[in-house]
Structures are given as C-alpha cells and as structure tokens.
Amino acid sequence: MPQDAGITRDEAITQVAAALAGPISLDEFVERVLAIWPTNNKNPKAPVRQTIRDHHLGKTLIMTDKKTLTPIQMALAGAQFRVGLSREELKEGILYVYPAFQYFLPQTKSATELQLVDEEDHIIPTEVTEITIQRQGLLGAYSYKQEALKLGWWFKKNRLSRQDNLLVTILDITIPKFRLQAEPHHEYRHHRKEIVVANQQLADTLFSTLEAERNERIWGSTAVPTAYALLKDTIPYPADHWLEVVKKDPRLRWNGTYITYGDRFSPIENLLRDLEPARRDQRPSRPPKLSKQQKQQVYRFHVAYKRRNGLWRRIEIQGSQTLSDFNDFLVGEFKHDFDHMAGFWKLVRRGQTKNYREIEIATIEPFDGGEGAHTKIAALEMQPGDKMKYVFDFGDWHEYVIELEAIEATTEPDSAPKRESHYPRVVAQNRPHYEYCTDCAEVERKTVAVYLCHSCAAIQGEPVYVCKAHASPEHDDHYLEEVVF
Ligand SMILES: [Zn+2]
Ligand SMILES: [Zn+2]
Image (cartoon, rainbow, N blue to C red):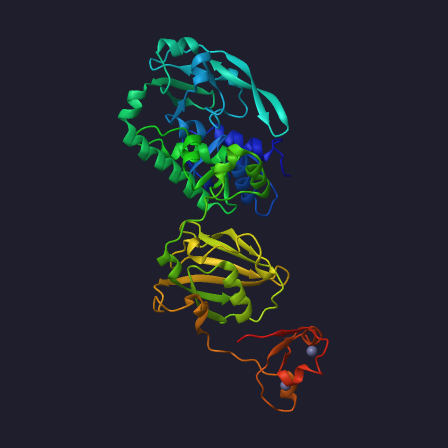
C-alpha cells in the first residue's frame, strides 16, 4: 500500500513544509510526512531524513540546529547581505543577478520574478536584461549571456558612486522579495570594525560546517543560506558578501559548486592552475626560508606501525634533513625492501571531531626522487602533537602514524663537525615481542625468528616464522619478509 496517497515522498515533504507556522523538531516533521505518505519500508524515517537533506535543505527548509527545521522564508527573513558594485555595473546602470543573488534566488524562480522595494516599502521597478560577456579562455574566445537588473535610474537617485555598496535584506525568499538600500562608502567605513567581526563570524560558521562534514566539502546551496539564517540575529552589522568572505579566508575555497578546504585541489584544478597565469597565485605558498637555528633543531617523532600493535620507534631527526632522509631511515629501521615508492601525508584534525583529513606532502621515489622528497623537516612547520601518515610501498601498504613529540635544541656542540651525521637516530623503542622459529619448535628448540615466510603461511593458514639457519634451504624460493620486533 505504499504511496496510496498518490504523492511522492518529495511532494509529501513539500506539503508538510508549506504548512509549517514555525520551527519544528526533525522527528516531528518526519512523523508528519509519514502520516500523509505511508510506506511499508521497515525503517521509513531514514529515507525521509535523507530526502530532506538532499533536496530540501537550503531550498524549502533550513536546519537551524541538528534537531530543528525552520521553513526557509522564516529562517531567512531579515537576513542581510552586501553587494559591491563594479565599475561596469555603475556605468551601465545594471546589477548582475549572479553572483550577487547566488543561493538567494530559489531554483524554481526566474530573475524576472524578483521583487525589490526601498526603505519605505515602495516598489523599485526593474527589468531583467541579458548582457553578453566576452571572455578569453584556454581554447580561445567565447561568450555567454548574463542576466542583470536595470537599476540605472535608482543608482542615480541614490547618487551611487564607485566604492558605494548595496545592502540587500531578504523579506521573503519564496517570492523572492528583497529590500534594497544604498550603503555609501562613509557608512561602510564607519562600521568597519563591526564588519570585520561579522565577516569572521560568517567565515567561522562556514568553516565549522565544513569541519563537521564527512566529505570535506559543503554544497553552497545548503551551506550559504544556512549560515545566513544562523547569523542573522547575532551579527552586529551585515557581513560582506559570502563570496568575498570565502575568497579572503585562506581556510576556505569556493570552486563554483561547493566550499572546501583552502589547500584542497583536485588533479584537474592543479593542472588548470599551472596553465592559467591568473590562477598561479592560488598555488600553495613557497616553503619558508629556514633559520640556522630551525635547521639545527631536533625533531623527536613517535613512529608506530599500524599493522602490528605495539611496534614503535622514537626517532630524532634534524630540521635541515629531508623527508627523503626520513624515508631512507625508516626503510632501514623497519627492514623494508628499499625499491618501492613511499608517501607522507599531513594529518589535520577536523575541528573538535576525532576525524583527520590527509594532505599529501611528499611522494618519495626509490633513489631519492619524488615530489616533496627534498622538503626539509623544519619546513613542515609541525608543532608537538601534530601527526603525519607514512606509507611505504603502495602495493603492500605498510602504514605508519608519525607524531611529533617535541622540538629541541641539538645536543651536539655547535662546533661538532658533520652534525647531521648523528641523525636520524632511534632513541627509544618498544619492548620486543619476539616470534620464534616454527621449524626449530618442531625439535623443541626456541630460536628468535628473523623472517616471516609468506609462502608457508599461505599454505598453513597461520604465520610461519623462520630463523636464519632454517631460511635456507628449507625456505629457498619462498617469499620471506624480514621481521622487526
Ligand atoms: Zn629455526
Ligand atoms: Zn617457507
């Protein structure tokens, strides 16, 4: 009997949302949807919640906290945003609909339905016009059309000039209806301090939403209206337009659809940045110049092997040494075959959560090559408590968690020749939990194993350890891996 009511789940949600007179708990909302959209689904609430998340947040509903939904027209009523005017807009007497109204115009509405009123609630008559924009792209010249509002007479009436802004108040997003105010530059300057605070609040709200999002990116269509709804009663004065705020915050980056971390780029985006000179400044900053003291400092790391609990080393390495040096040392210490690739990632904790995001910092090729291989330890700018992920051999995937425990002055006298030769070094390690030779055990001898025989282990279905004496000829041609304790 599902969908007996003859409506879809989506329509049921729209109906319930339209009937709301105020905020409602998420649970109660889902109950109301299920009352008009009965289903045989064993767990009917989950798909309703999912549809709300995917199709209604930022469009018909705003999640004002984790458990509360507010109809969007109510959540955004009174929210304000600032729009700066370009030289061209002033000269032509137009206001481009995008990006000014991005995420403030419902997708179901067209720009021609947009209503504007002034401070006295008088209608500001406007018309939508299409402007053809010429651009030079990678593949040659191209053009596209942009919608704009004709507002020349209103600009003149308000004596708007360069550096003046517009303040837009959302009256009813579902119409959509807005109040337009001129904000002369001296007003803006007068409120400069409050605007700085408001911008910070807007950036922080977007950033904390991002930190809590598993996918490391937030959709503008949901995140932007939600942030404005959350801030409308707390900010001291309207913040700059969200696009400006995102652009100026190094933690954030806008890619046209979603907001992500400032240091997160897809391979395609990296390629585009290299091709387009204008984008080159978006490249991660150059490594910092290191002082003599930074280079001499000793970084003490705790290195733990993920696959075997309790296997760790405390390793000291100097600031001037590189990730390639670190890799070489780890390969030797943990007895890996040297001829494989390895990688280092910075692990950045996401807000107060237990989750980390990974930022690739180096790929080390055998014999000293690879992107980032020559990055100096000091240039990583790590603080005690910061973590890295290290993987040796992308086939066998030997993964380690490396935590910086301390940064200390070198213990070597300043005049000591070739100071670096003392580092890296192991200063502490786990108590060994030895494994013993399986072959020796058969004749009741106890010998510490040197290898793990993968070939025998595969046949016997359990780990087979082998001592040095038994390695040959018994395990000739077998796949032996040196074991570290
Ligand atoms: Zn043996
Ligand atoms: Zn074997």
